[in-house]
Structures are given as C-alpha cells and as structure tokens.
Length: 487
Image 1 (cartoon, rainbow, N blue to C red):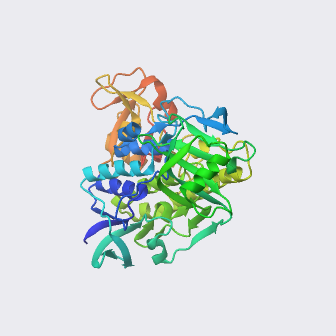
Image 2: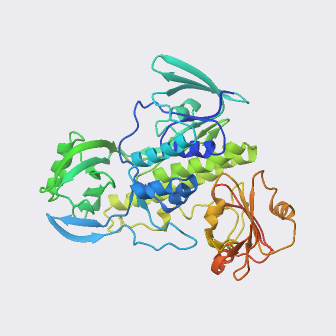
Image 3: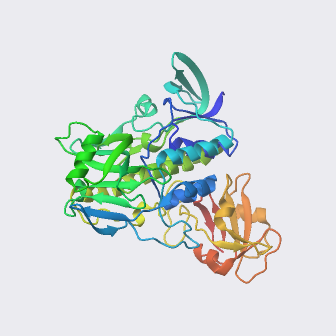
C-alpha cells in the first residue's frame, strides 16, 4: 500500500480530515488540481461547533487572532444611515457552551491556518496534482494522479473525495447528485475594497421592503477588503466591478468607490445531495456530498465536521465505524439543506426577519441520537449527543475543562464518583473501550482530588451529564457521547 488514505481536495473539509488522520499517525496525502491556493473569502462564518472542533485540532488561537466577532451592520437607505442591526445578539460563554457566538474569517485564511497545522504534522498539500482516474477492489483503491503530462499510479486503502460540487470522485462513481439549480436567481459574490466605508462595520444598502435586492458588504478581518453580495438582474450583462458599482450607486452608495476586485463568482441556488456518501472504499465529504444556499453560513462548517467525523473512523478502520459515517453525516446534510433553504426563501420573499439567526445555524444541536452508534433513547443526555463542557479542578487545584480531557485523538471514559471498582472493569461495564482510551474519575463538588482524579467545580459536570455516583460515560474522539451506563 503506497499510502493508507488519499484525500482529493485541499479545502477546509480535506484539510480537517487530513489533520485528523495525521495526528493519529495515519499516512495521508492531500492533492488538489489547483496550481495556487484559493485566495478569496467565500465561506467566512465559523459557527460555535466549528470553533470547538478547531480547539481540538489545535488551531483555535490562530483563528481567533486572525478573525473577528460579528460586525454590527449599518443600514443605508437613500444615501442615509437609518439604523443598525445584528444577526444575533452576543451571548456570554457558559461552562456547557464555551464559544456561543459565530466568528468571522475569510475562507482562504482559515485554509492557510489549517495547512500550517497539517504541515506541523508532516503533511503538505500537493498542488497541481489532479485525480484523473480511480478503480477499487475489496482491498484497496487504485488512483491515477496527473501533473501536467506526468502520470502517477498510487494504491491506497481509502480515497476521500473532498473535491467540491463538481467532484470528479462522485462523478467517477456514478453517484447521483440529486436536487435543483435555480437559474432565475443570480448573486454576485466576491471581495473588494470600498473607499468611503467604515471598516469597523458591515454595511447594507437597499430598501427595507425588499432585502433580497440589497447589497451587503462585510469587512474581512486583517485585510482592507469587504466581502460583498449583490443580486444580478436579467439586464446585468456581466458580473464585473462596474456592474457592482452601478448597483451600489443606485442604492444611494455613490459616495463609496469600489476598486481592487480581488475575487468574485456568480452564485445560483444549487440545492443538491449525493445519493450516497460512500461506495466501497471511497467516501464523499463536504461540497462533493452536499450543496445548499450560503444563507446561514452552513457550508464550510458542515464540510469541516464531515472531515472531523470521518477522520477518527478511517483511522480506526472498523467496519462498524466506517458504516456509520454516511448514516450520521447524510442526515445532518439533509437538515442543513432545510435550514439554509428556508433562510433563502425569506430573503427572496422579502421577509424582514431574513437577517436574523438562531440556534439552528450554530450546529451545537447537531447530534447522532438514534444512529448506528447510538441506539434511540428518550430524554436527557443520551448517546449520540454532543458531550457538554464543564470546569473541573485537578489534585493541584488547577482548573481544567472537560473539553481539555477530550482533546486529542483518543476516546475518553468518565467515571463519576469515588467508587472502588477496578477501572478496567468499569470500562467494560459501559462498552469495551478501544486501545488508548483515556480514563478519568470525576469526584463531586466538595471532594478532594488525589492522583489523577478531578473534582467537579460547582457541580456543573454532574448536572450536565445528569450523573449520579457510579455513572460511566464513554465519549467518542469527536466529542459526542458513545455510551452511558447510569448508576
């Protein structure tokens, strides 16, 4: 076998997956047919659950340093500022939700941070390397890579297509990409400099009665550019800087001069879902598996979590885990399509609440309850749920978070209470733990920690897990609950 895993596509999805594999010591190659790295903003909204994933991957500090919280949006009507608004009010962190607010960073900069992390693990993206052929049998996948006229044949255990909406991998497998593309709606998206606009705010130009017709410009942290979105009508001959300037002038933005169009694309509502996310030893992830409107900022985030979900399962390689990927992530993609499509409908119909965002876009409520790894159960905290965070205190009096215990490539077994049972025996009582599972005993508030024990600071952990003395909880490497054995 040349390499255990080949990843086609070096966007956020492919990079996240590769980091997950590399930090587990699994050999991985990441190839991308592009000759240079993508340089635009595209998906710039990072949802709270993605920030938790980034903390585990070791890139959160860099992401927070490079990006910004949500900007207040100034509303411009008829050449005047008539008000301000937010998509969502700022929420304070809690022990259970340490990152409750979205964070904003241009996609190319997010990708750069992920590439740096991957390089730290000894893996570099191979640009100008296109996947042009694949074949598989029961034991491996044979892939053909092209660099100009040069051809390379590699044999891998698994291939992952994270190669976007026009995925070569998906098409080669003959997997249907079911859905629709609405050609009646066209939106010009891109990055531009805007002289005369305050870079400390987002700006919306238009008429309150028709939000879908307005132009939005959002600052890109760390750059002089704004990301913009502007609808294109039937009479717009081309998606260009003059077209955008003319539209802005028409909405009373004549004092703002646009220049340096760094990146642009024309977007059409493309709502599609792959019929399957897996065929044999080949998997689909990210935009190769699902496409939906950008409303709600779900695309990049969903792809990152596809990679996060698939990484530890490929590293383990057990049939049970590999079989669970499609069942878990396809169900999430269906829900994301529903949420983003409903938000798109509000924009098109001129709903005044179209800009508002709720918990449905944060992805903190994404879970796998009732899936193949989490049999259905009612009420409370159950297998398949996202594992809550909570502060603990170690034997030295230092505060530690549960997320810190989960962080890394291992599964985690929590044993609540000062019980005398042998730890190995306790683990078997929940589910047979995989090799390398980290075991931690959590004592109730007021107890005294010794050795490797932790005390539940303030009783938050016991409450979050609805744990009585003797409760045992197995947490998957991706931070979801695998099994719970109540006292």
